[in-house]
Image (cartoon, rainbow, N blue to C red; front, side, top):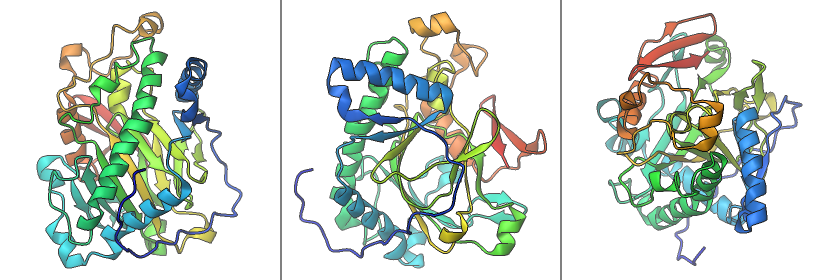
Length: 364
C-alpha cells in the first residue's frame, strides 16, 4: 500500500476471542497468493467450486493487507459511530426506503427483527466511489484511505475470486469481472457496521436473533474477520454453524445476484447473526464489509454459454430469462423492503416476501 499521511484517530480495541466451545463450520481456506501460477489457479478453481457446493462460505487469505493495515482500517471503521454526534448522523441518513440505496447511515432501530423488537445495529455505507456523496466531518480526512481500501479489495480480492468462479463455470476468466467493473455505475460499497449489546428482554423476545437468516442480494459479500462470534450459516443438514474468527482473514459468500447469474450453481447461503457467547456479550461488534453488486445494467439471467451449466442443468428463479431483472432493479427492491415489510409465515421457522416475482425467505 502506498504511503499516506494519515490523520490521528482513536484506536478501537476489539473484544478478546471467545473461549466458548462453539459448533464451527468447517470452511475451506483459499490462499489468493497461489492464483499467480497456472497450477495454483487450477487448484484454487477446484477448491472454490467445492467450497461453494458444500458450504457456500469460505475464507480467503493471501489478500495483500497486513495485520497492521487491517487494525488501522478497524480504527477507521469505528469513526462514523464514535466520533460523529447523533445530531450529525441524522443529516447523513440514507433514504433507503425511498431510493433503494444504503449510501449513508442506517441508524439503530430501523429494522424490525421479531416480536416487536427493533435492531441495535448502526451501519455507515460508502459507495466504492467515495465522492458519490457528502460525508460527516470526522470521516472526510479518512476518505483517501477508505478509497484505497475499496480499490484494493475490488482489484486484489474480488476480481481474483470472480475469475476463479468464471473458470469454475468453464467460461472465459474475465466473464464475471466484466460484469463487476470498478469504473461502471454500480452500488458496490464499503460498509462499516457496529452491533451494540441488547437488553435481556429483547433477547428473549427474539430468541437471541439479531438478524434473521437471509441471503445477501448482491453478487459477492466480503467480510473482514473480527473476533466477536455471532455469524452463523445454515448447513445443508439444517443446523446452524458458527463462523470462526481467523486473524487477518476474509469471509466470503455469494448473494442472490451470483446465484441468478450462475443458474443456481453458486448458491446464496442462508446466514444470520445471533447474540454472542457469554464471554463476549458486553462488547460491541465492529465489522468491515465490501458488498459487491454487478454493474447496474447487468441482467441477472443465467450464463447459458457455460459448458458446465449445460451439463448439470440450470436452476432458474425466473420463468423466462427475459423476466430476470437488472441488477439495479433487484438491488432497489431488496434494499427498500428489508426490515420494513410485513412477512408472511410459510412454516414455524420460515417467513416470506415476494420481490420481483421471486420468493425471498427469512429464517427466524
